[in-house]
Amino acid sequence: MSRDILSMTFEEMSAAFSEMGIQKFRAKQIYEWLHRHLACDYSEMLNIPKSLRDTLSENFPLYNCEIERKQVSKIDGTVKYLFRLHDGDFVESVVMKYKYGYTICVSSQVGCKMGCAFCASTLGGFKRSLYAGEILSQLYRAQKDLGERISHIVLMGMGEPLDNFDSGMRFLALISDEKGLNISMRNISLSTCGIVPKIEDLLNKKMQLTLSISLHAPSNELRSKIMPINKKYDVDELLGMCRRYASETSRRISFEYSMLSGVNDSDECARLLASKLKGMLCHVNLIPVNEVAESPFKPSTPDRIEKFVSILSSNGINVTVRRTLGSDIDASCGQLRLKENQKHKKGDD
Ligand code: SAH
Image 1 (cartoon, rainbow, N blue to C red):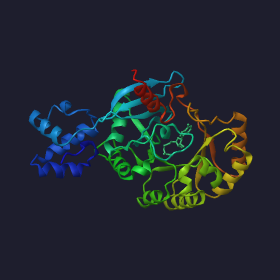
Image 2 (spheres, helix red, strand yellow):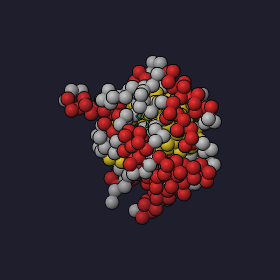
Image 3 (spheres, protein in one colour):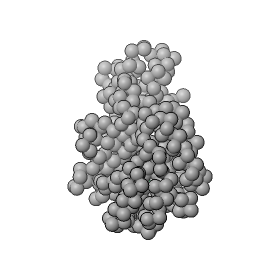
């Protein structure tokens, strides 16, 4: 049975090698090549005999991402990668520079099933979930390409990470492994549209990561219109789980709220949101919606956003407006893949 090597833990690799009669110290070497030196291919592992490299590549394929396209924002230096996976599918990652270091936004699936009305990932259709190694590889390739250490991660690119739970958890274990890049869980955020039972599974793992919830509307009537997942797990069920999460982990929940002009940006929405979040250890991140050509939503005006902020703050809710980074390079999730797929459909290159 062939196994994707980049998704294997050190223990799994050691066990698989020993079953094949490969010496024990080789697992340590290979693991370091992959997760410390960020090797893209077995041919780079020069202290491993060629015959062993051949055996390994036959039995343990290395599913690395290749850079298909790279765009750098002239405005703020944000870098967007379109990566080609081993089977020809595409995913996107974005690297942003903040005062505290470089942050990468990685994808967890090729496309998305969740159907949020304003999101380009959904428009491109769902293809498949990524392996843990393919999520890692986005970071490894970007770090190598930039020659800069990436210290923070947001699982906020294409796809719904809690719809790919096991690979997501495996990714977290590998990226925070001290034998690898050893990124602290405190520097990692996971964003979900609100799959409540999976949030509970995450809670039971008692990890120190930051949970982000894509809320975008305070009432069921409105949320169900723009986010189909709300018909399965409604606002109150979701917020109930968030309260439990915050109190049991003592970690502040981050609520994402895309401001859609005339849809979810009224004073009434702000008041209802404030009342529903009252007393919870949380923070609201307002994001002027990124316009996607195929969807009808427009960003709220700065005045509207300011009023929304003032209602939340005067009700004691922590709130910030997210800076828009990479607006000149289609840095909103799913936009590049959508363009790439359309290009391939049209048959030009
Ligand atoms: N599926 C996960 C993570 C991926 S989406 C989730 O739903 O959280 C990452 C974030 O970008 C989510 O908050 C999502 O709602 C938001 N988003 C998607 N399309 C957007 C757009 N066009 N403008 C602004 N935010 C968008």
